Image (cartoon, rainbow, N blue to C red; front, side, top):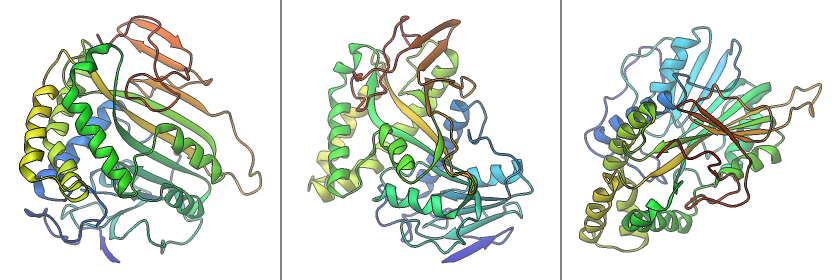
Length: 357
């Protein structure tokens, strides 16, 4: 393990793929990819109305950021909580040269044994790790062991599966092919993308309580009428357009033995569909927040809840889906029927007409 603390120097962003990048990771850490990771951070802050977390943190003293990437989230958390020590861990030393004194970056593999003291963190943050984690249960188990009683785990992940509230996704044949191929390759490699219901099941199995779920629609271009969603969609189109090759090239050439030229043909057709505003596809960004029980009352908890919305301000009080956009408020029962591309039982049924169309 290597450590970078305070204002000590770490290497600038590499211009070629890093040899220290996590071997199981889909994407390589070259300069354009790291810029894209910073763009993803901006997209998430838009989704969360400027919040860096949804866990109810009060004066945390020690924070762990798993898969810190460029370190941008860890740095902003250190500024927001100057009394906390923020530890960012990754396998690639791609963090900036100058950072706050209360930030420490470590080169470490979270799927190996952790060297941290058990019961030592107030908050553990996991974001954009799908495709890099083989054993999510193991990661959640390690998080439980190393959180203090009463500490919070927060998992923020984008489900790459495609969803739509109408039948326009039927026109996106190349996109569905691309996604099905990539998901199949990841499953073949032992890195299957979890469905949203699995995160909740796993944290429950490990003993977490007070589990909250928040799901946010992320449009894949500027097709929504809502100005805020349109802006998010524009950024996500750039994110997706620039990242789709890096996501699939290794999978298709190594797992399926495709030729690079075949991959480029698929990508060219995919990118045409990505810019088509008549195709109303979105993905769901999910946030799962869970608390480690207090040592003296391990079973104290409140009912788990789920919300699918576009703002963390819409906190649920019961297990229901709430949608509020353009002044139209509607509540929708959680359905066991799934929308196209959504693979678990928290699908969305538009009881008022969809505000995305």
